[in-house]
Image (cartoon, helix red, strand yellow):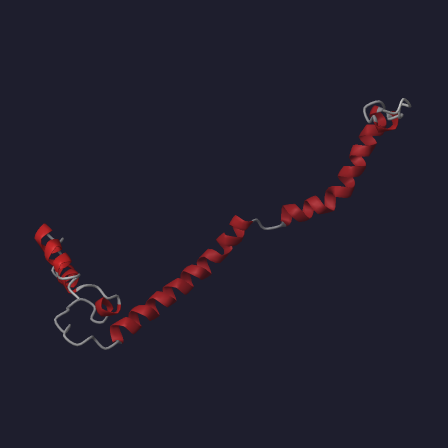
Length: 123
């Protein structure tokens, strides 16, 4: 180890209170433009909030077009008995027993579920 001690008194900022305050004020003054820029910057949550309304509108348009396309599509052969929204059940590949439960507005019974499983989903 070196026996000569290094003089670090110039780094002691608390020895001269007036000089320390001037140093803090100078740093604060130089940092002010950057701090103002960061305060004015939009955060990620606020940025997402600005996009919420246009995204919801776009999602509504896509949903409307999708439902329109599904209802206008030709039904699959042998599924003419489906009453509710023809074409959608086929496009979503909903099993026939589930379509019947939806059309009848009822929950499936245990025997209905067993039959559907035994038939491989009714497809």
